[in-house]
Structures are given as structure tokens and as C-alpha cells.
Length: 101
Image (cartoon, rainbow, N blue to C red; front, top):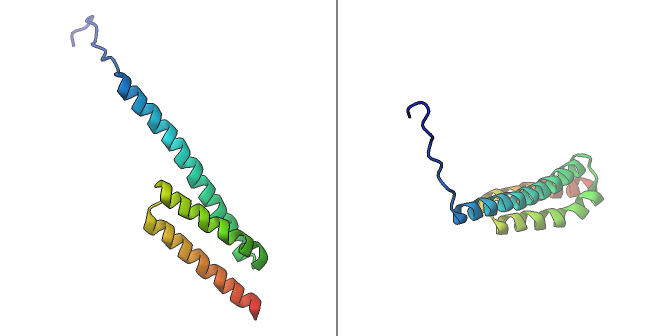
């Protein structure tokens, strides 16, 4: 544009503003769910590496439940969640087998 001329400012529609607000809210909820799942997985992994069978046993069910909820809410892809669950249960059962010996 030529110097000195005003630029056109496009007015934002109400629906665009609403959609942007909904996206921010959804992102916040997704972030909270993802953080909760990752925290539980981290706690379970540390209990497994510390060879603490009782703590790992107490954390296994809530962790699996949180992963399932994340899958349901669309925070995690189904295959990703199932992979996490599989690896964590294998590690837990390996620990339980060592503790039984």
C-alpha cells in the first residue's frame, strides 16, 4: 500500500472468537489429562526401577485407568495408550516374578 494510507482491518466474527476460546479451553483440558497420565507413568516406572513391588502394585491400576481415560478423551491415540499399558504391565510382572523368587 502507498505510504500514508490506512490498512483495512478485518472485523473478527463472533463465531471465530468463540471457536478460538473453545480451542484454548480444550487445549488446557488436554494438557491437564496428558500431564496426569505422564506423572502416573513416571511414578510407576520409578517404583519398578526401585524394585518396590508394593508401591508398583498400588500404582498399576490408577495408571491403567488414567491411560484409558486419556484414550477415551482423545488425548492419546488408542495404539499409543495400549503400547504404554503393555510395556508397563510387562515391566510390573517382571518385577513381581523377581519378588516371588
